[in-house]
Amino acid sequence: MGKSKIFVTHVYLSKFLKKLEDKYQVDVWPDKDISRKDLLVGVKGAVGIIALLTEKIDAELMDAAGPQLKVVSNYAVGFDNVDLEAATQRGICVTNTPGVLTESVAEQVISFTLVLFKRVMEGDRFVRSGKYKGWEPDLLLGTGIKDKTMGIVGLGRIGRWTARMATALGMKVIYFNRHRDEEFEEEYGVAYHVLDQLLEKSDAVSLSIPLTEETKHLIGERELKLMKPTAILINTARGSIVDQKALVRALREKWIAGAGLDVFEDEGKVPEELRTLSNTVLTPHTASATFEARVAMARIVVENMMDAIEGRRPSCLVNFGVWKDNID
Ligand code: GLV
Ligand code: GLV
Image (tube, rainbow, N blue to C red; front, side, top):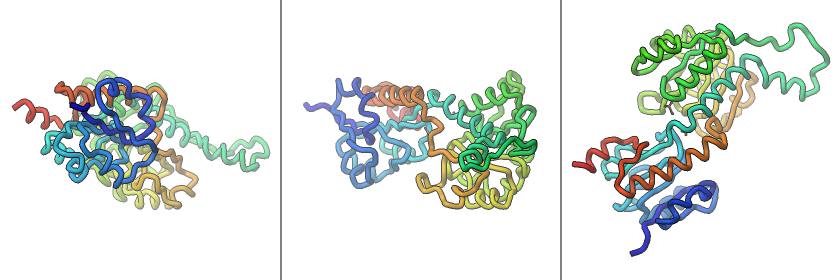
């Protein structure tokens, strides 16, 4: 009997697959971008797929792989690219990579806060463009960070680490989450607020929630108008949590002071209107892009893959229902 096949959708991951290659036939897409068509062909006959957040793993793709497909190991903490219901119905485990990119993403949130309040990017552009002619007392005045309020939407791992770092900067931290965490509130001196109140009170609002049906466009015109005109919005989660068109208006018409964005509604197609605004700092979905995080993510996708194929419950399973069904 031949070895079972595992399909890996991106060449970058090839250097982390030794453990899998010892036991399985590992087919790695030899390039950076895989087209939908190549993806549908590539997964055929695979028991496992290692996928990126940019790939849509839906019912059509699962069926193209075939009934032997046991696991989709997503190389990301977010898994909005995977149709969980379709996977569960087909008995396919879906796994993610939580825990190892927490600090990296939270560090990006803090970077955006510092860079926007201190106007670092504007200062950099000012000097590079040759405009700097000498010290002036009122040149590019920013906003002090100490005693300002950081409002965190979503108190998961990333939200918590952000809260701890913001506290260390002397910020006051408030949060909104589906569930209150009184222990965390007490330990770190953070306070719970409902979303509208959080938006009204915060000087920086950071989003650390997954994208779901409920969170799509959670931040739209109404919410942006609740924010202070001096406040900034930070999104390192998923672009579609924010209504991007409304955000562009908010920034242009100064309903808010600025935005730090690592994610966009249509990834890879950042609108000109956003790119030309001086009160934004934009990064190409690199909040989790540290050497440390990327290596650890690779280790986890491999572990999840092996566990699922070999009949152990993967530690980062996200569609729990599939395992109950396995046991029954
Ligand atoms: C990055 O956005 C991730 O979900 O890992
Ligand atoms: C992701 O790791 C989160 O729980 O925020």
